[in-house]
Each structure stands twice: as C-alpha cells, then as structure tokens.
Image 1 (cartoon, rainbow, N blue to C red):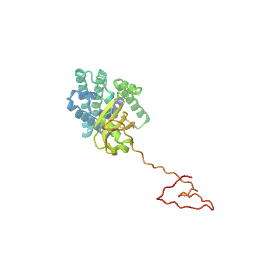
Image 2 (image 1 turned 135 degrees about the horizontal axis):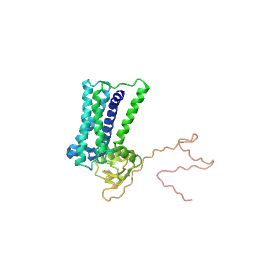
Image 3 (image 1 turned 60 degrees about the horizontal axis):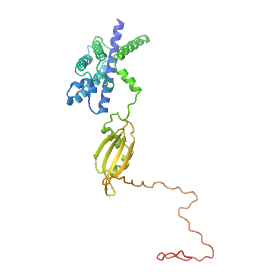
Image 4 (image 1 turned 90 degrees about the horizontal axis):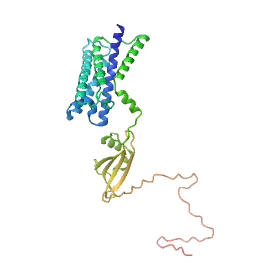
Length: 318
C-alpha cells in the first residue's frame, strides 16, 4: 500500500518538471528560429498561418499547468483548483498522445516536438508510449489528497528511489537522450547555424564600431543585408566629407559577442575611403624640473643683440 501511495505522490513534481522543461525548450526554439516550423511536432498538422499561435498557446498551457501543479501540491484532490489542474494535465497528455498517433500516420518525417530542437527524430512508438505513461501519471494524481513531505530519512530515500526508477523509464522511452549526448560532443559549423537577421542587427547596434561610426549613417534602415558562410554583411547609406558613401559592417555569426569588421566605401566608385584620423588625446607628462615655457637661448657676454623685424626676411647667408 505504501508503495502505491509514494508512487502517486512522486508524479506531481515529476509532471511539473516535465511540463516546465517542455515549455522552456519550445520557447527557446521559438526565439532562436523566429518562427514555428515543423520541429514543433503536432503544430505541423495546422495550416502554416496557425502554427505560430498554436505553438505559443501550447507553451503557455504547459507553463501554467507546471506552475499550477507546484502551487497546488499541498492541496487535496477535493479542492477545486488542484482538481482542475490535475484533470487538465491528464487531458493535455491524452491529447498529445492522440496527436502523436495522427502525426506518425500523416507526417512520418516530422519529429514529436516535445522538447523543441531535441525532438527532431520522427515519431516512434517510444515517444507515444512516454506520452501515454505521463497521461496515466497525471490521472493517477486525482487519487491522492496532498503531497506529504517525508518526515524520516527512510521515507525520503524511498521517494528518491521511486523517482529515480521512473526517470530511468522515461529516459528509456525518450529519443531526445541520444540527441542530447550527440550534441554534447558535436559542435555545429557556423556555416550551418541559423542566426536570424534581427539578432545580428541587435548585436551590431551594441558593438563598439557602431558607436564610433554610426554618426556617418544617413538612414535608419540598412540598404542591403546578405550572408556569406559565417559572415553577415550589413550596408548602411552614409555621408563623409560631403560625399555619398556606403558603411559596410561584417558581423561574424555567433551567438555571443560576435566579431565586427567595418569598411567605408565611396558610393560612386566603390573604392575604400580613409577613416577620419582619431583625435590626439595623449598628453606628454612634463618632468618636475622642466619649465612650462621654453627658455630662450643664452646670449654670450659682449655679443650685440640685433633686433629682427617681423616684416623683413631673415637671411641665412654668411
């Protein structure tokens, strides 16, 4: 009897963690790619215009249910908020299982999208079995009153053992584990990385070359943007010394602190124009015994001093 009670009590934190992780990975993918594509799994069953709203709705529902399971963990199933959240969690996994069955039948080339970018492999029986198992776990939480905090070390060790065994079972049913291990030992080449143009522009506007040379730009929007392998080039119309010019930024495609290169080109000839000389800000420190005003050369004793008129040229002939 104690095993069944402990097994059911473990499901609430487990389900909450699964929902929060699934929501977080989907949001990360949505922000990284800037649009909802087939990697979201069941959203591929929707029309193209409805995929992004459906993905946002799914992420929001998973987040709300995960937080709700945590907040109502100490309440019984007879309390209306806890009962509604646990029923909604079970219905979510039931609908997800049915959607995976339909997705495997109609789009066998699309991944389940359960954990964002990590769920790109086609839907398999393991993924459907995992979803069905989580649906049963969510419905089983309706039979308990509230989650009891273990009072003794044996009780805590028993709960941890049950949770660890169930995590092993879920891991065996999760194809994402292999994908994660592959990514740990594999670095995607920069030529294949997907970096949205808006992220490149945001990184450019925070860079030091932008703060230094943006004064020459005459338009808020770039005139041209294109990508070549690991670099994205951004061209802004500019003006320098009353001449039309093109200010070209080359931004390296990496997610953190990208390298930035800059060039100023003549708009008519396409040749490189010289940059303005930086202001001389270096000041030479005077020695303690050095006067502020240069001293005049000493005059020898007995040598006549001939004044020199400023309006007459000085001859150097001997």
